[in-house]
Length: 402
Image (cartoon, rainbow, N blue to C red; front, side, top):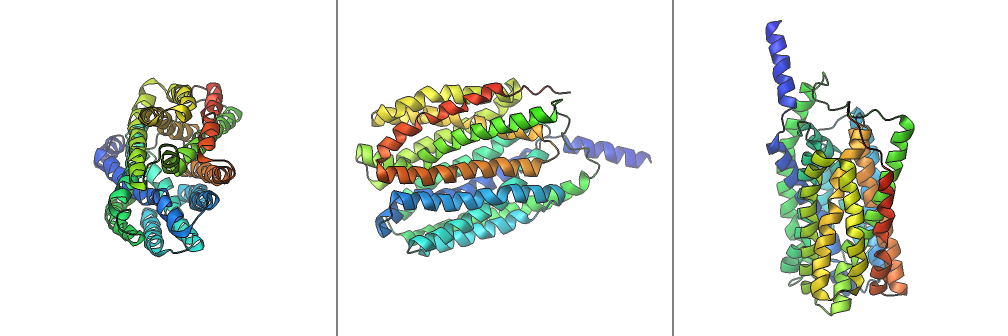
């Protein structure tokens, strides 16, 4: 009896400890996953040049990728809340690997669509369970854990245009096959994490490791807060779609840069975006999620309004500031949503990741059509007002812990 009691105490101490080895491993897997995803917008100038694509078709490619990534995520999360699948991420990475191989040989618009849908499906399977793993390894420091997880993805997104500029642009589209190496490494890391995750599921059957007693809000206030967060996601990711999908085209058009030069400027913005993610989670733990979200919205808006009128040097400066500020909120938004619905971690993570991808998909498609009918510079002037919509976050309730 005493041995069983001691074992139970050991288990509780273990599950309430922040396990940095797992957090950094899942973060690196996220880096490789999002590196593969970010190849898609990074090769847009090559695809546009090779196959005479319009901005509308570029937008539709992004729509196909992000819609496939978004529509599946809430369903994957809902299912894995009830039936956790420790090895599901392996299947997701196999989808992404097949998409990379397909994209390297794609020679028409429809083949490109099929390729990006495969990568999007892999992403949809990867994210919900990964968010749960970061929560299990957090030891209660959920903002910190979410930031470590997110910064891996953002660094992967930042590295993609740089690697594409160095490897693919000087050679040919078939050099996209080089990124199969990233998928293979990710499979090895994910496999090791899967066994840890499986053991944790057995260890936590008594719920001793779940962090579920977070707030005292009524159901109506929870629904209202979720709605506000989704509006915020709409404004942030519609704007982010403008920055990530069309930024290389924008600097090429406005400042007459080559594809390779434009990719380097894209890297500067994406690296700043990754840096902001590192700060957002810990600040949310320390000062409160709502305050980080408020700063992200009202801090980024004036710089976004200035961006379309800056020269190349100040465009880089403004993009660094915007990237850091606007990205700081996403870890806080995810953890805030998880704290609103703490018993549905997979579903709520899938919903918000999926909605974020979905807004990026819709934004890319609509902005591509607008760019074809006007100009890419006009698109940037219109989109500079989007962050202001995020002001609705002022109405978010503060979560009072029990």
